Length: 301
Ligand SMILES: Nc1ncnc2c1ncn2[C@@H]1O[C@H](COP(=O)(O)OP(=O)(O)OP(=O)(O)O)[C@@H](O)[C@H]1O
Ligand SMILES: [Mg+2]
Picture 1 (cartoon, rainbow, N blue to C red):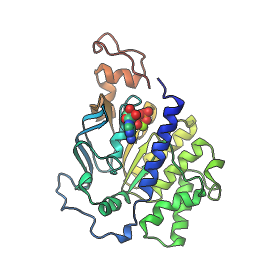
Picture 2: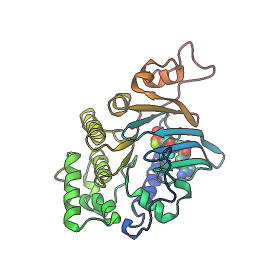
Picture 3: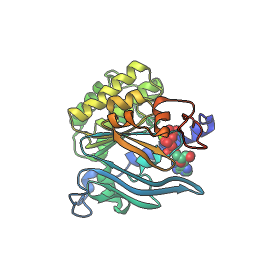
Picture 4: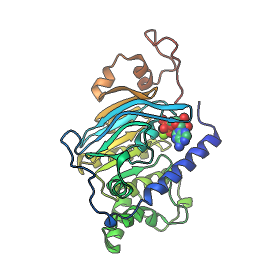
């Protein structure tokens, strides 16, 4: 079932407030040491979510969610709507805290980080929010520059160059002086991506970057994500429902189901899996086949 309009609005609002929290995280130059502890080889340079449990009131969303995001790869997270994909990646940047479990990024346990160190960590993670979440009263150039200003590392001329470069990369060279309300949904989405890549981040988390875009624009965004990995060696996490996109951009695919990772493997492995729940999802079947799990019904996307 598609989310109702009011639910969608609530989600947009939640996304927007979290985007503000994320972008207004303090300036990087005000920070002292970035590491809360010396990294160990097991934790260094990657993202690990370990046995995460997260509930909202009575509703258990994550129930033992474990995922490694290897450096230099793009890990795609798939799963039915409302299963907790966005909730999972919000833990990576400390927008949500787990009820239990650990979230490691570059050897730092995110839930334990003091606020300043958390802000420092966020400054090298690009986050493409599911609902773009642009600031309506700022023009596009200012929206894209926002994270760079918070980083506090570049002068105005350098920021301006970075903004132009990022908008060029998403194929929107002429929108700098326009306002979010003047752009289509797809254009706003691309501005959200520009804002993330302008930071030249080590990691980018893309929450449904192509949902709602036409096939050609989706393909352009897919190629951009591939380029970010291949040319700039950015480690990526991509949430998507679009299997074509998943196969194009992903080096690994993880499926979230009932609060935990049901499948985690390469593209070749997922294409060969015999798990009926995974097959149903990747093939977009309305019901599980005869080997399906008893009682399982087609869950809506
Ligand atoms: N801040 C919050 N407070 C309360 N409930 C929340 C909050 N954030 C998410 N949820 C709930 O957690 C569940 C998972 O939400 P989430 O947004 O992660 O789903 P999703 O897998 O990203 O879905 P979609 O594919 O539709 O984006 C939903 O039931 C949602 O209502
Ligand atoms: Mg989501």
